[in-house]
Length: 257
Length: 229
Image (cartoon, rainbow over all chains, first blue to last red; front, side, top):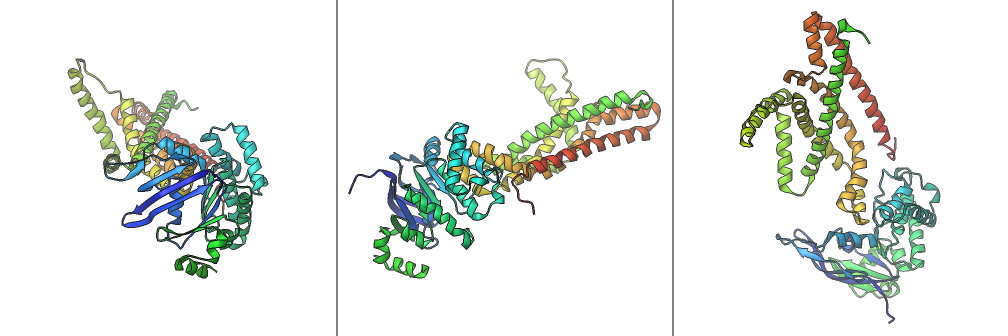
């Protein structure tokens, strides 16, 4: 196998919420250019896993590396795990753009302002450069005419595409998608998936938590199936969809069709 | 303007003072309000306790009683502390400062509740998006929470402001020459209390009416991006 750059690496990640252990030791790494679909029944921990990658949730134990840099964690006196260096966390988050299920565009800003906000204020990109780049990405996601609109005036599909443009504008190492089409009306799902398909073809590194079996099967280069906080399957879609190793996954596929 | 038996200019000065007391108190109330709200919403138990203690005490005692307590109590305290710090003269509390501090302190408690509600009304997902894009906690507050909470805070803020303006009438009791006191002096000298208190009433009404228009304008401005139904 050729030498590939590791964008994100998780090693034995554990996370519990009170008595409920959501992640029970996850080890996964994403290489540059990979499009990974994370599948799993609800409650399997897939969203938590994604949120651990950009530290919206702090893993209780395990190691997390983002483009070769290990996230420094420490224990508090009451034995909670917290980041040792908040500046490092902010730096790492800026490399990992996230697309949310509920879009989470900033409602008091126009679409253009949404897209340039983090580049200008977090990455300190010169404003004009950020605007030029924003126009380019809004073009790419197919809503170049909406830059002066406010999020509330767009359809769900347009909002999610704007949110994808916001993610692209960070020129991130990896884009994390947290069920990006789950909050959309069925007729709007296609336009968002098409944008994501284009990004995959460009060779962008993507980790996508999704219920879209078509996307997982046809677009992703790798599929991970999570159940009860553990990785049950991990492989190329054509292999694991055709020859599931676990009964859980074959049952899951059957239920989803 | 009417000469008002020669007391017109004096009432006008009083009106200016009323405005000064109101605006200065508002400034303090806003600072205390935002600190109080952040303290109440913070993860630190001690901060939450202090803020809760503050709002409970202030909201449970009449404004007039508080003002008298601060004015006379503050006077006593300062004059007992003075000698300890090597100052022998008698210190008079400036009634302007006492008034502004008391009113600011009282309305800070109301603003705390208004701002707390407004912060809670801001969509959590949008704050999380800020965090996820590498913003610091302060930047999330400044760039996302603050501009959005204004819209939620304005109605309550407006009410507090109107009540605050009217509460400034109390400072006349501690000897500050606001328009109520000026009117009182004029009424005593001319024996025409109704005339002067009517003027005062109209002045308050003017201030509050103009305020309402400004607040309406602000509400429209900060509702940008909110879908009208």
